[in-house]
Amino acid sequence: MGLFKWIHEEIKMIRDRDPAIKSNWEVFLYPSFKAVMRYRVAHFLYIRKHYFLARWISQKTARKTGIEIHPGATIGKGLFIDHGHGVVIGETAEIGNNVTMYQGVTLGGTGKEHGKRHPTIEDNVMISAGAKILGSFRVGANSKIGAGSVVLTEVPPNSTVVGVPGRVVKRDNEKIPTDELDQVHFPDPVSNDIENLRIENQSLEKLLTKLLNELEQCQRNHGK
Ligand SMILES: CC(C)(COP(=O)(O)OP(=O)(O)OC[C@H]1O[C@@H](n2cnc3c(N)ncnc32)[C@H](O)[C@@H]1OP(=O)(O)O)[C@@H](O)C(=O)NCCC(=O)NCCS
Image 1 (cartoon, rainbow, N blue to C red):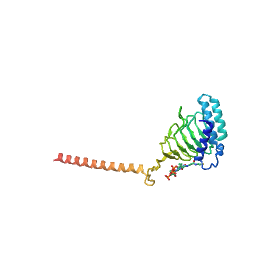
Image 2 (image 1 turned 180 degrees about the vertical axis):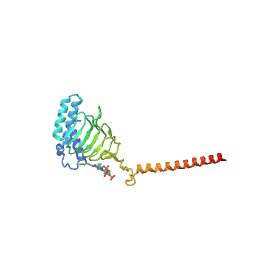
Image 3 (image 1 turned 60 degrees about the vertical axis):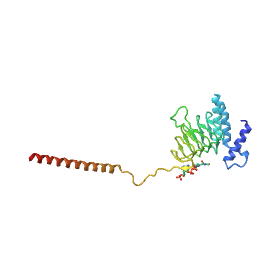
Image 4 (image 1 turned 30 degrees about the vertical axis):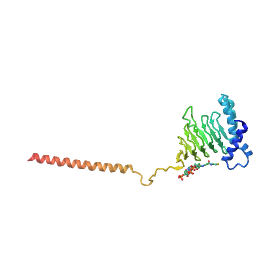
């Protein structure tokens, strides 16, 4: 794609997704615009094994924009990173088309995996401010990750995930009911044990009475 066409698409994409923008020129002030443009150059160098130069561009960009994209990451069209401070995208992260993310997002590893260590984000996913997605699983297309969530497992498509650790609270726009938990009538293991012992004791008493009766009957029969 030519540079002008790419800039034109970036302008359209940012105007579609950020209501705060007032003129096309403002696009050049967006850290997202600078970071994604430089990532494309760094990635081009990375896949040609110019690792040092690729990392140099990525690190300089991180210091300027607050957005650190490893040049090894694979990123589709239409990535928009609003505000941009403190965004980290790891080396083996894969990002589909039309993904939006906000400040403070990490697409990172857990430190326990080797090889593919970072998440795969499918098309049209929205990752809210401060969300951390850690591990080599997939976040399904059209999903939303709530602000401040820590997502550690696969997310099905069309889901909303919130919380720490992240849990799916909506799928296909339908709320997922949480299990009703009775906070008052908790099971009491000690009284359960006592009740079981009482029942056992009762049946032993019955058995003993029966045996004593049988013995008495036997003695009587013998006496006759
Ligand atoms: C997750 C989010 C995108 C909303 O998605 P949604 O699919 O419309 O979900 P809803 O608003 O219907 O919320 C679903 C449930 O999750 C809860 N929830 C929403 N966001 C949450 C969050 N970040 N943390 C914890 N719970 C959250 C809601 O209270 C609701 O709970 P309930 O069912 O008990 O009422 C939105 O809440 C969010 O986090 N936006 C942040 C966007 C952002 O980063 N802005 C920064 C701009 S600078």
